[in-house]
Image (tube, rainbow, N blue to C red):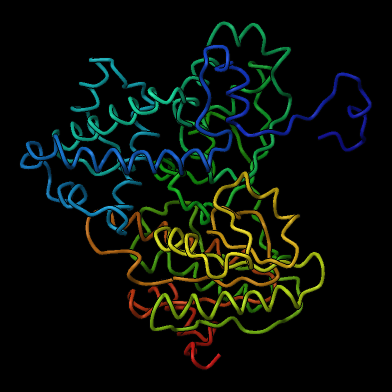
Length: 466
């Protein structure tokens, strides 16, 4: 670190601020071949990939699945038989997306007969999707081949395809010859928990000096990893040492930041009890070394106690929360923001398509739209927690935190972990006021909130009493 400011005066010193996907696109020069990345933002790119994968699963359901399903495992059959736009379908599609990103693309399976055969027959690691039967994996390869074909027909590369290409470039003679000129002395990584396994493998390659220990400063909170991008860490023993070995970074020093400057003590207490939902939900083995209980020492003055509001239906939430958020946004001084964050992806799409209150809010449906926040004026933000990660709001209305969002069945453990992370991330966006809403028609309050309710961190009220 250049504490004395000596390097900043040098003509050759510069700071490059960009996404990993922008670095990859710059190096690979896809535009020369008439290609373009699906997105320059990793989070948005994976969301677009997921939509494409969901569509291809549906096509396989109507074709090859008819003859293959009798040879597949029971859990895989249940996943493949689920209906689109249901929680079970979304859970299954996310598992397939992770398999494609962290196994198929990372191992360069594609059209290599040898690698495809190895994928079908080798012993699977514990963090991978549960695919006990060979036919399960054959169906995954069907979906993968269709997914690649549709991207190819569009002339775009998926986020994981681009990173796979970039990893090959970083291991090439070409990069070895130019890294003294193009490499970095220090790499700072924000939101590391959003990086998947192969994205994390790029970091040590970016250094200018290959023979020296890499200098990489990383910030992450794996409890905010709503997309399973930390898959693979739980096989790494030794805590942060295991993480650094997995990323080939050598000796790594860990610093825990436990002081909360963002939110009131009352909101911090809710977060601590939501945090207890991780091991209490029966998923402590999946959480691994990084999932120790948090103990936040807040630095803000006390505020109002967060509330859990029970509604009978989604329509009741819609007609209550949106006018409520509008009035709150109009009452705040300039620079203070209000957000309505939806914990359900399916319902977020339905809310977004409804036109009744459209003029009252600024919709944020991907990370690239965050720059429009400065034009929000007196409008409140309507989004999902992962789209506004890193942004704080004076007031947050976290809606559709329903127990029915995670259905029991195959792959439900991963789905529950992601939902806990979504709630944790959404609640932690609030600085002063936090209101959480559930709908009885969708299962009532999520089990994730049980500890916060039972220990008095959340006041429970009926929506008619607001």
